[in-house]
Image (cartoon, rainbow, N blue to C red; front, top):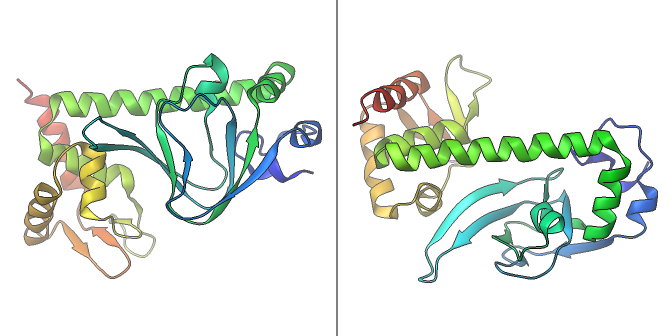
Length: 228
C-alpha cells in the first residue's frame, strides 16, 4: 500500500505509490525546528505523515504573518517544485513529526503520469488561492475587530454537544491570532475582553468557545455591506 496512502492528495486512489516512495527521503523533525526556510533554493515537496507545522512569512524587521497550520495528510512545498522559484514562506514544526520529502522531478513525474493526482492538486491550489483572496479582501476592507471575528469563525469547528456553538481547540494564544490578522497582541487581548463581556466567547482550559457565532457572522456581513 505504501506510507503515502493516508496523504489527502492520494487517499482513495488506486495508484501504486511504491516507485515514487523509493525515490523519496523520510525526515523526522522536532518542535520549533525550521523545516523549510524563506528564500531557500530547495524544490522538494513535503508530505506530512505525523506532527503539525506552521507556514508563515516574515518581514525584514522580524514581523510574522501566519498563513496556515498543517496537519498529518497535508503537503507543502509544491509551488517551488512546479516553478523552481525560491521558497516564499517559512515552515516551522509545532510538534515532533515526520515527513516524506520528494524531489521535484519525482513529484512532477507522478503528476504527469496520474491525472487524478494532478486534478486533486489543482483543486487544492485553487482552494488555497480562494482562501488567500478572502483574507486579502478582509485585510483591505475590514477593520481589526471584524477581521478578528472572521478569523475566529475560520479557526473554529461546530461544537458537538451544544447546538449552534463553535469551538477552537486548543484555545489560540493572543500573539498567534495577532500574527494571523496583522495586528499587535495587546489589541487582540482588548478585543477578547470585550467579546467575553458581551458573552460572545468563553475561554476554558482546553478551548475557546464561540457562544453566538451567528452574531459574529452577522457583524462581519454588516461590515462588508457598510464599507466606504
